[in-house]
Image (cartoon, rainbow, N blue to C red; front, side):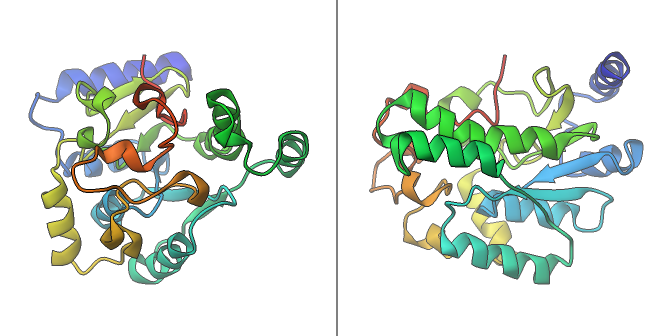
Length: 237
């Protein structure tokens, strides 16, 4: 399937012009890969926008429950189910693997080193992600280039060799203002931590509000060097 899917990806690139990767391209993907497109949400501003864009399309939605999320995130999850009327599949860490890791390292070992933090992310996010993507050909995300320096040159439509899947970022080039305006215009449910200075919201122990003038990613893993701040969900070659 890998070679055939990579061929499909190459065809999509050839068929589409440079400026054609807008929200309407979601419909193209949903029609061409019916039942084989999935969107990953963390219930951020961005992900709420994308969920609204796909709510009437044949695109599945999933989220990763790491077990360390904010209560406000769970509240947004509940309100999103009611608002969008769309099932949201939940994926969790392997309990035995997680039990062993916490038993050997403690509940907050991610503060001790980058290696242990990445190991925690791998157990709670990366491995469950691989399970979530199984059987799908297209992965939709809510990534935006403003949120990380490494995403500035990221293509909107890309081939993910690690997961062997076509990946599309429909709002990659949207500004923060465009995102918040869209949320307000359509009265979308949102995580109220955004109103308290939280920009990128992940696990509670690893997320804080940013101060005025700080970088977007300053609120995530703030004890680490800026160039190490990725959890492994979105790896680019």
